Structure formats: structure tokens, C-alpha cells
Length: 260
Image (spheres, rainbow, N blue to C red):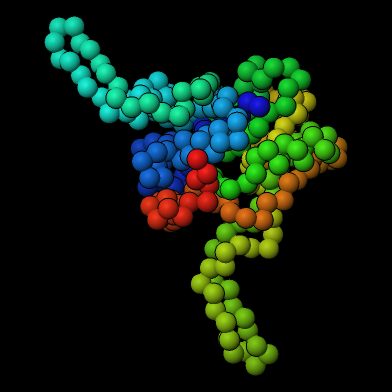
């Protein structure tokens, strides 16, 4: 299946990094978070990517246009006839990447609508955000989607707890304090969606519409939204602290999404 990834937002909550680059290019270890997401999809056999570019999209274009320069050791001959030798190979040589300009300030529904022309008519596709990693079973989400035959199947995940959890006794004393619980009980949309082609019927050419609002509301009203519940690891990179956390997982070889 083709994989559509939203890469155009400004990432204002991660301003320390996104003032200088688009959020999908913020690194985890030596590679952008976008690369990690693509690498994860590729590990399940999905290697055709469509990137919806916007804010500072030229930096993403440059990364893939010069992919060998970014990933390989290089020898240059500086004579009049320059020669370039890339010393390393990489496992991404069978990827295809479509880099689509979808508007500097457009919202997510418009960005998805703009890449409709790259999805063969009637074909289902995978759809996610360019700033979150997980150990979700991609092919299991596809199986769930095919089983229930809805327009869109989202991955329902537990957000990481952001506040300390207290257990308070009847007399007001505190017996337990957990700095930050691993997960909250509620589910949220973690991306990693599977969509039928008919999802484009819910989208318009209005660049101010967010996919997560009017289109999703209409899909729900039509009884066409399904969920795949994922109870394991999921982590967005919305803040500087979350960026540090993901980099720590990578540096200590504890990254749950590293399955390649």
C-alpha cells in the first residue's frame, strides 16, 4: 500500500527546533523522525511514500534529493572533471518517495485532498502524521480495516501521562505518588490510519479545514469510522522534552519502533 505522511505543519510547540526546520526533520539519533516513521512502514513491506509538504518543505526535498550525500561516506576528486564516489549502500534503495507541495499554511484535510491524484482510483492507502513513532502492527491495522470495511480505520492509542498520579486516602494522606504514569486510560487518534479511496469524498478544496474536525465528524455520523486498539508503545514528538525522551530511547537501544 502507498503511505501518505503529513509533513507540512509548523510544530509551534517544538519551537526550539522548528524555528529552523520542519518538525518531521527533527532528529532522533542521526536521522529525522520522518525517516524513522518511513523505515518502520518499510519493515512491513510498504515502501511507496507520498509526503505532504508545507512549512520549510524544501528542506525535506533536499534531504531526499541528496539522500546519498546525507547517508553515505563520500570521496570527491577535485580536478577539472570532478568524480564522486559513494562508499556505502543503504537498505532504502527500493523506496519511492513522492514529494508533494500542499501549501505553506494549509490544514490537514486540504493536504490530503491535494495528493488524491497520486492514489490510484479505488485503492486503499495508509495515512499518518510525520511526528510520532510506535510499535504498532501495521499489517494488523490493514487486516482490521478489511474485516470491517469502513471508510477509515484509525489507531486508538493511550497518550503518555503528563502529570503525576496520586493515590489519596480518605483521611487526605497520600500513600502513592507516580511521577508520570506510562499511559492515561483514555484513547486518542495516534495516526497510523488505513483509508479507503472514498475518504476523498469527505474532503474539500478549502485549505482551512482540519481532517480531524469536519471530515472525521461526517465520517462518524455516517458510521464509517473504525478503530484498531493499540495497547503498547506510541509517542509523539510535540515538545522538546518528548524529543529528548525519544533520543534517549534511541541512544540506549531501547527504541520499541526499531524493528529493522
